[in-house]
Length: 271
Image (cartoon, rainbow, N blue to C red; front, top):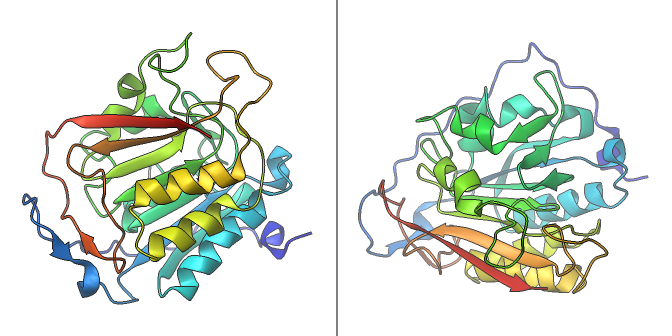
C-alpha cells in the first residue's frame, strides 16, 4: 500500500500557512518572463481521495504530480489525502490553501456539480458553494491553474445531453484564475495523469496541451455510461480569453494575471 495513504491526521487547531503575496503584473496581455519565479515562489498543492473512496490508484496519481513538480524545482505548500483533504481548504480557508499556490492538482471522485472532499466542514465542494464566496473566488489571491482529475465536472450540452452549461456551473469561479482543467464524463481510476501533466508542463508545453496529452494517454475512448456521463470520455479546459497557450512559471513566456471581465472559452476533445 503506498505510503501516501498512511498520512497522520491533521491537527484541526494547527495554524494556517501565511498567504503568499502575488506581485505579478496585472491588466496587460504582453508576455512576461516566468524566470522571476525562483523555486521558492513556484508553488503547488495537491489533494486526493483514494482508499476512502475506493480508488486504489489515486494516491499514486497524486504522488506522481507532487514528485515531478518538486524534481523540477517547484515548492509543495500542501499535500493532503483522504480524511486530510478538507473541504474547508477550498472554501472557508481557500486563501490559505487552494488560493495560496500557483497550481492545484486534485484527483478523486467528482460529478457535474463538484468533487468529494472530507470534513471538518462537509464532504463535497459544489459549484454553488464556491460562487457563494464571491468576490473571494479562485485567483484573487494566487491560484493560476486548477486541475480536477476526476469524473466531470465539465459536462456540457455542446458534446453531451441532460446537463446545463458548464459556464453556468463554473464560469463564475474565475477571479484571476487562468485555466480550469478536468473532464466532461466518467473517467477511470489510474496512476499516470499527475506525473504526465507535470512532466509536459514543466518541459514547456502550454498547460492545456499538457493536460490533454496526459488525459489521452491515461484514459480510454469510451466508458459504460450514458449521457451526460458518457459514453465518450471528454477531456476539457475552461480558460480566460487570450490564455489558451498559457505556460506555467519557469517553462517559457507566461501571460500576466487576467484582468476582470474577460470572456471564457470551453475546449474539449475525446480521449
